[in-house]
Length: 287
Ligand code: SAM
Image 1 (cartoon, helix red, strand yellow):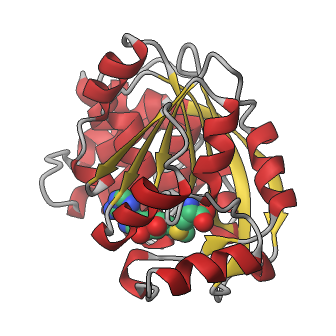
Image 2 (cartoon, helix red, strand yellow):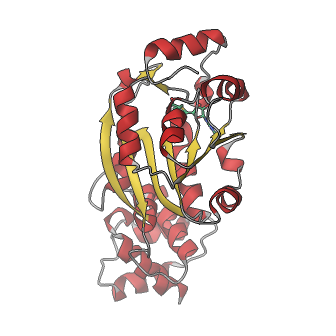
């Protein structure tokens, strides 16, 4: 078994299996041992932990996870990588389960039941950037028992997760992440730490699940429908965005009345509202 996390052994494995990178799967493999160690310590992986890894690639980070955790489940979409993982890079570990599936189609709740008796797991991943948002939203919205998610993402996306109103990066992703978790930027990662080099800057962000959401709202789904509609047309006023939104069925007068009751101007845009204000607005509209 080759120890990965360096260019020489990574290239040797790729050549041995005649593996070609698939751009459509967002394949950029880590080749820097320092970064890998820092991710494991950022995720605070302990011997009793059950970890879900999304997209193990050739198993680089998986090796570190297997060394440090009790149980690892690795979900990889590319079937060409499975023999590499099973026969080679992870063959000496008996605490890993490899699943050849699209993470968006996997029943993660069932995995948590089976492997961790329904107790919260930790998610660690160098994510495929083309589906960062659906993966994160899927984990939160399906109410998977989670302690934390420590992920490599595009740096710009990491920034979007932690900003508040009044910044250009503020949006539906910021609000969703902050409703479910506390985001913390852990490190920037230069393009040279990957093979092949990505065209964007990367960063590791840790999302620690809140015990209780920071705001109370009667209808969570309605609040997120309002948030999505508000940012779909972010240059419009909130009243017009919600009025134009297909499927939302909220009339202009009820939004105007809610804004008035909240002491906000009728011309306000969604991008100026805090999470607490969106919750308040959803509660007024729901009435
Ligand atoms: N963890 C490896 C590393 O750090 O070197 C590889 C990370 S690479 C950025 C992303 C990985 O996710 C690739 O192995 C890719 O094939 C896999 N992947 C892409 N889309 C996926 C999906 N929908 N479900 C599961 N894995 C996926």
